[in-house]
Image (cartoon, rainbow, N blue to C red; front, side, top):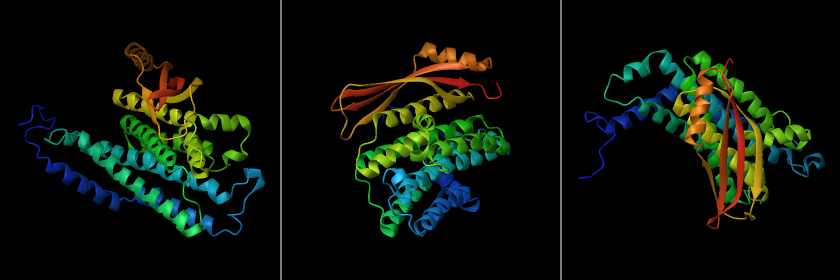
Length: 331
């Protein structure tokens, strides 16, 4: 017998989670927000883009890159943004609005299972669309496979972690589908702008590109493009993604709402990173976190310093320190 007590209620059979997951999968099929806008739409745009004459010709203004190679990682960002900021929060907010989560809390099934099931469903959709985009782009339109596959994979994982952390935060604070939609879209469009959807990052003014580098999707697109070209993603981009994920996860766990921006930041480099590495974001000190929550509860701006490091070869190769300003929603 295991010495660890089960976290599940004694009356809850473990097979119930499988049934719940199956039910949520059917719901995702009947209400296909994620399937249509998070999977089908990015793939369709990629196919249309690939059939435009001249899209694979190098453009001097883009640093010799092609429009197809520029927009490939941007479409990955679009897909992940739809699944994390639109699909996930809308479904959970709908359940809260209809009282399903409240009724579920009176049963032996933990309400957290519903959250876990929705996260798994959207992660499966994310894996599906990423696989299709890579196959269609490389096999269908001659896009070269990532020349730094390790960096490409790491950038994808950190992007998924950061974006789904933001989506879970939206799910935690939105009390209705209208609220979830409004908050999701307030984040969705600015993040995609800085990812380069309407104006490629290569064509942005220096100040806009600098801002883009410190946003989750801007850092993601920068990392993915570097990996496609054979360079390992920059430490700055990887640490920015890790830091955004940490801050939003902690806010979601505390049930607090707020708009997060980077107020100030510093980077330090101890040694080059040219291979597989590990990005780690360190939780804020307990007292600093307590003061930030008190400030938000009083509808005041909170400040939080987050440290992140990249480990390479058993040592800290570079570090990031960011001061995040958290603005109360409506404050």
